[in-house]
Amino acid sequence: METGLKNRVAIVAASSQGLGRATAEAFAAEGCRLAICARNRETINVVAEKVRREHKVEVLAEPFDVTDAAAVRDFVNAVVQKFGSADICVTNAGGPPAKGFLATTIDEWKRAVDVNFMSAVYFAHQVIPHMQKKKWGRIITITSITTKQPVADLVYSNAVRAAVVGLVKSLANEFGKDGILVNNVGPGFTATDRLKELAHVRSATLGKSEKEIFEGWAADTALKRLGEPRELADTIVWLASERASYITGQTILVDGGLYKGL
Ligand SMILES: NC(=O)c1ccc[n+]([C@@H]2O[C@H](COP(=O)([O-])OP(=O)(O)OC[C@H]3O[C@@H](n4cnc5c(N)ncnc54)[C@H](OP(=O)(O)O)[C@@H]3O)[C@@H](O)[C@H]2O)c1
Image (cartoon, protein in one colour):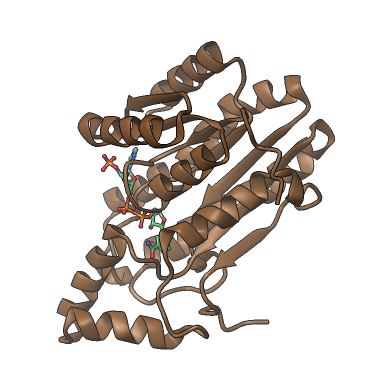
């Protein structure tokens, strides 16, 4: 399948491991020039080196926190200075703590809004003017199945990620005329460090082994298994490609049939 992505400039936020990293590697495999970030300098540099070596593409890697609006601005400016444009922007960040409502704190609510909502606003603010100039752009937010179906003990995610969907739909409507497509992808249970962290918390809460927690999650899906990061990454690459040129304002779940609604 010809994706038309060769030489496009792809920003993938929070990409030193897990879903972000798999997405960055998938864009590199399509011949995109890549801009990646995470807070830890060492790990993001390791990913950058590996991608350069394996895919022979140019990579800009910077360590910063996506809740820092000025750092996001400086990063996007550096991307445009180095590559001449910012064609694709995938927003992503670490997930909020797993808790039921009465265990939540006001500070954590504010942090969840900053990390999982405002970070997407910061990136969108910075990249859209560059996309408008080229009359072409793709913004894809990585959120969660919680945008369609709340998950027990993930009340921060259940509440805050809905705002991202509101943002996505609004941006899709406002900037469609400029050739900018904006979509959201919601992973189900996908085998990353974040999932191990959730299994650990759930195991302590329910008094079950982590193995049982993983098996329970797999059993809940139609496909009876967890997802692989690459499966989410491939969906994002397709959404960014010319093959998905009439899709905007949508949430696409990559959840192996975990979502129970129609
Ligand atoms: N895996 C799943 O099953 C699943 C399901 C639904 C939703 N999700 C959501 O999808 C997102 C990615 O999940 P994942 O499983 O890939 O997580 P992960 O394995 O924990 O990876 C998170 C990545 O984000 C970076 N990061 C975290 N906070 C950051 C920040 N404030 N600024 C910049 N970089 C940051 C981390 O690097 P540094 O620590 O160096 O910053 C790391 O590279 C999360 O929001 C998660 O809740 C995951």
